[in-house]
Image (cartoon, rainbow, N blue to C red):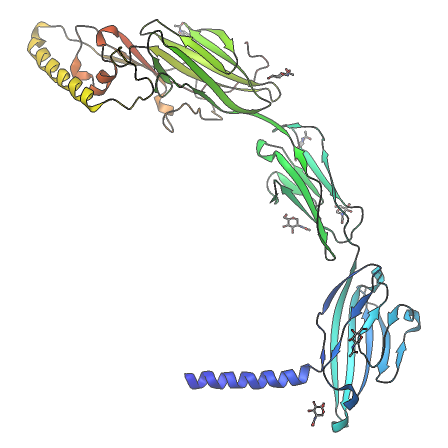
Length: 460
Ligand SMILES: *[C@@H]1O[C@H](CO)[C@@H](O)[C@H](O)[C@H]1NC(C)=O
Ligand SMILES: *[C@@H]1O[C@H](CO)[C@@H](O)[C@H](O)[C@H]1NC(C)=O
Ligand SMILES: *[C@@H]1O[C@H](CO)[C@@H](O)[C@H](O)[C@H]1NC(C)=O
Ligand SMILES: *[C@@H]1O[C@H](CO)[C@@H](O)[C@H](O)[C@H]1NC(C)=O
Ligand SMILES: *[C@@H]1O[C@H](CO)[C@@H](O)[C@H](O)[C@H]1NC(C)=O
Ligand SMILES: *[C@@H]1O[C@H](CO)[C@@H](O)[C@H](O)[C@H]1NC(C)=O
Ligand SMILES: *[C@@H]1O[C@H](CO)[C@@H](O)[C@H](O)[C@H]1NC(C)=O
């Protein structure tokens, strides 16, 4: 194993040594040269043998991209013949094999072929032939790119297309690239680039296309040039409509507040330009606009009444609107002495135990009284709403749980005081609504997101 490795290494070294000797009489550092129009270019050749111990003879020829081949120079160690057509264009100083082009022009592009014969003085009669090809490109440096947006004004999402055009005054073989907020853009469903990437069509424009656009231009002879940045403003929304309140006890879309408590509700949605908001009260199937603006202030004394409210956000540019509905229930929270309005989950364990014990005692009492009393009832009705399930573009952020499509409806929990069947009530609900006698009805309304219906007026 080790021996094989050593042998392989040895063979390799020998081969390397031999090729080194054979191929490295001449050396050209770069076989591809990117020249600048109007500038000189040196096709540098390093001879790795003592010129004084050999005779050389060779030619430089040029093959244009079209295929035409011209012999430019024929030379020996002592003399050089330059094609008369190129006398003033080329510089060749024998015995130096390098070729210099004085002033590049587009026609100088192509392959430059060096063919060199070497005959060493110590080994006359053996001519070594060496050949090399150097590819030359000639380009014009790229000037600072300029971008143009069409249309130049702000656009409405889903309704408009935007075309970005990047142009340079000077420059050949320009490579364009587009950035938005300094992130490179790539082709996609909505992003269409022209063949050389000089134009970008966004069709149709959407909210996420807003930002700061920039075009980069470069070529082989120019570092990346940045255009000035330009903003794209997109009118969009409303999105993610949400109703929040710092007060009250919240269960899904039901807010429970203490009687007489002043509660503020805040309506928010993402939109450009900013939405206008209206608050609507729904009572007995009739809707009524209460106030405008993002904030609603409610103080209610009407106990055990479920009131439905609606926040409607409207973007008057996109002509889109969104609504979020919620129910307000007035009930004595806690003992009525102090209100623990903030935290729905923070029912103290002691209170829960107390209530559960009372509940068990109550059960036992009821069990003994059972035969003399009428059957008691607990009703649980689900009123399915009249409107049908339509597409819901955004899930209301009010939803307490992820997908509750089946849960929509009004859950009514009715208890008849004195005839209550406690066996059906849970400890938990009792602990929340301690003064059951106050409460005749508790309505839990799980809110459905009202489907978006484009409208020109908020007031319809
Ligand atoms: C050949 O000429 C080039 C410039 O024309 C120079 O850089 C190079 O050193 C020369 N080589 C020799 C061996 O003189
Ligand atoms: C002849 O001279 C060249 C250059 O000095 C050298 O590389 C080569 O090894 C010599 N050949 C022989 C056979 O001596
Ligand atoms: C946007 O481009 C699409 C094709 O990509 C075209 O159907 C539509 O009419 C264009 N919209 C506008 C407003 O130019
Ligand atoms: C890019 O391509 C367009 C046509 O698709 C052409 O008009 C434009 O000159 C090209 N730009 C550059 C710098 O090559
Ligand atoms: C155009 O841009 C895309 C991505 O930005 C790139 O993949 C592609 O090579 C570019 N095409 C040209 C001709 O520069
Ligand atoms: C409310 O209106 C719906 C139809 O829009 C109707 O089915 C329902 O009975 C009405 N409810 C009341 C209480 O008027
Ligand atoms: C759109 O609403 C804004 C306020 O939200 C208002 O300043 C603007 O005048 C309205 N524009 C139109 C066209 O109604």
